[in-house]
Length: 381
Ligand code: FSX
Ligand code: SF4
Ligand code: F3S
Image 1 (cartoon, rainbow, N blue to C red):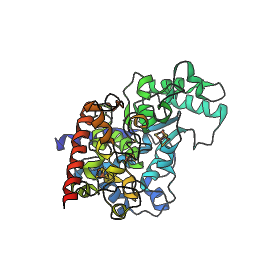
Image 2: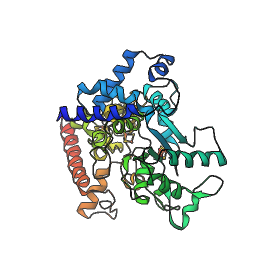
Image 3: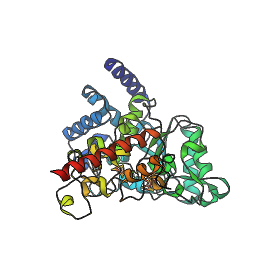
Image 4: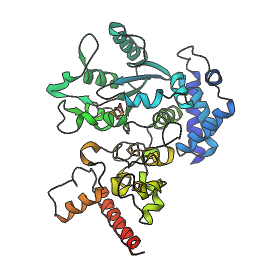
């Protein structure tokens, strides 16, 4: 098995190395050097990335080579309805990380917020990139897509082309399509009730396979890791029921949370700012949705591994789950209360159908019961 994935990646990288460099933007070594990174830093990063993608450590040199060859694949990044937080997550660090430098190095043919072109020229750039690299480019789409009668909520460029038309057109000839962020993956905030623009996910407007990379925003590592994974293998990764790569979204936030010991011991923050909060207790009772949320934040964190919501003292709000704006709120109240109401028929608040998969509801009951029992035994003490 290990032998097979080595071979597969080797074959793929050999093929890529035969393609011409798309832009004369120097080598990755030069770019890293200019930004104060040594070869050793780069190899350390490649090692971390290999572990991050759940690949065997022996693949580190291949991951480094994939990064070096990442300028052979043209990338088109489209913006739909969103806040641009996904691009910010990746590109707006005050000291550029190796991840963001790799993204600079990638041949980004079109990206509305960072390209110099505007108006006609921008439209022409998109069209010529699609034509020139037909069937070879990687398409990244950020944002939900307004549809139907209301699709004029989003028009792009001087012709007034709708966002939906742009996204569908660019999808048709892409080699791989990534929905970057929860908006593009599941509709996001503009699709929250009452969804005035009738926004939907990218997967709903194109018939092509879409890999979802949700999070509002996703971490820079999840964005770069997914592109790198495609460069390395050229095929779709194993996906979960919501088309999220299992290697990144296979575990719950709760599974690897640093406050998990407190959860198990029944030590909860009861109100923000209390003694429990000062002691770093579990945030479940002030609304943490980590037990229902699949993402790798508790392992990878944000901003070059600096911190993440739970470390900063607020519960996870479930931002990588479908429809979390509608289903995970109120954000500072525990979900378990509502799940008990729902299943026991005690409350009018019927959320089980909105959570998406029944299994989460069942896990929620288990978790709520566990939290209650743990708290009771704590009180006894
Ligand atoms: Fe914003 Fe991206 Fe949230 Fe959406 O991130 S951070 S609203 S997922 O599409 O810009
Ligand atoms: Fe961490 Fe939240 Fe789980 Fe508590 S409930 S252990 S804060 S993920
Ligand atoms: Fe989002 Fe929860 Fe991570 S809110 S950023 S999935 S900790």
